[in-house]
Image (cartoon, rainbow, N blue to C red; front, top):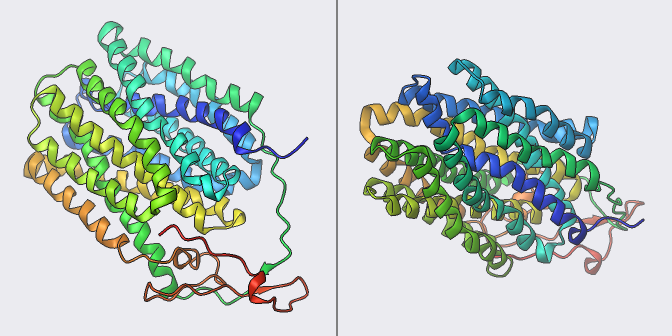
Length: 430
């Protein structure tokens, strides 16, 4: 049997991703409201959500190491199975600490699932269609917000939280079942005639472009996560019900669906950096829109901009990283790109509650909009993709002046230098 390809595996990866993000995107707007039922203050709600993101950040960073120990598919299926009881018990919690612990378990396992889906997509997708494949997977964020938002809020309004969590368990269970039956993790190893020549560890200066990209992701996701927390709290202060809150998010998901796909495809043609810049600008506009929002359609518009920004940032940044790194490095490193966004959630959620209590919503939203604009400034100097790869694969390098890409040194198996025409061609997505 031949090696699995993107055309055969993508539908299964898409469904797995949907089952995870249906739960995550559907639950996120109502978790602050659920915590209020336990008597949580605004600052405590912020800490609760930051604990969730500590959990998902930890799992994302551990995914590469765990996958090498137990295998990618086995880890993927196990994470889905382990989290089902925790998701059910979230609806049975009687103390806030129980809800926090159970939510952390669900998000820990979900983080492993999302990270491995990104890895599988990166391994199966060809470079010329990579933006397209990542965009298709990223469609699940707005699709999950649309369908999950419509279902979750209405179940809560109808029968309360216990029934809602029970229903979500059945949807979540499709992830490990489908992965066990259909996911094929047999990738043929690539045997290239030329290998990249070993070289000393990369210098600090060669890591600067990578740090710029990671910092930009961090700042933009700070803006997005603050907006995701501020939206339900703002609507709750105006006495909107959980169903109305999730409906606003669902509308945002509907608007985001076409953007999520076509912006990723455009990144294949126009360059990752240009589309990332657009996403960061949308994040700033989204939080600023919350300042003047009072009607349901105002919040739906803000939710749309935030979801577009989050979807573009996730899919295009992952495609960018996959352009840069070899398969061996990709499996280890790609989850860390996702983890940067989750780390932004930790800081953003933990600080938002306290800032709201001291400076108010307006001060928080203005400050985080500035962070997203700073993210644009950080990625703008990046001219050469291999500047970023040099931080992981030292033989690939680029002039730190952001102008001139250097050709890597290639050698044959016996250590002899190969002619220039036999060296690898550098991609250009600028």
